[in-house]
Image (cartoon, rainbow, N blue to C red):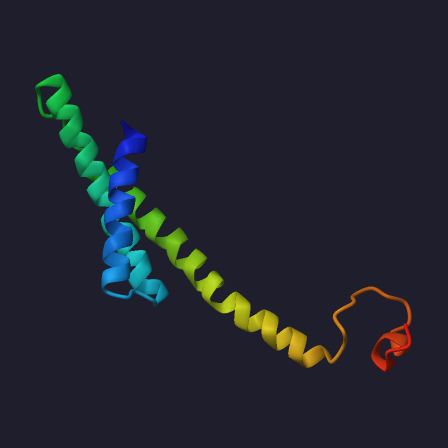
Length: 113
């Protein structure tokens, strides 16, 4: 049941993210937060349908999970957004052929390897 709900919520989040071209880390984290709440509500609703009674919702646990997921998502999205630029700056600043740890780079830079 959990896998099916996460698949449905993830698909809807992906469609919305591509429809509105969400590119900033804070906007992506907001989508993760909304998806976390949607997943919890759908799980409670499906649980209520199966057992024929509405389950109690632990709102504080849902909000804690939402804040945690959004925070981790924000950090992950920020890192993945800044990592390619940092790697490019590192390669451009080194001026070498990209061989790290070799003993003598004079031959690599002159092309006599």
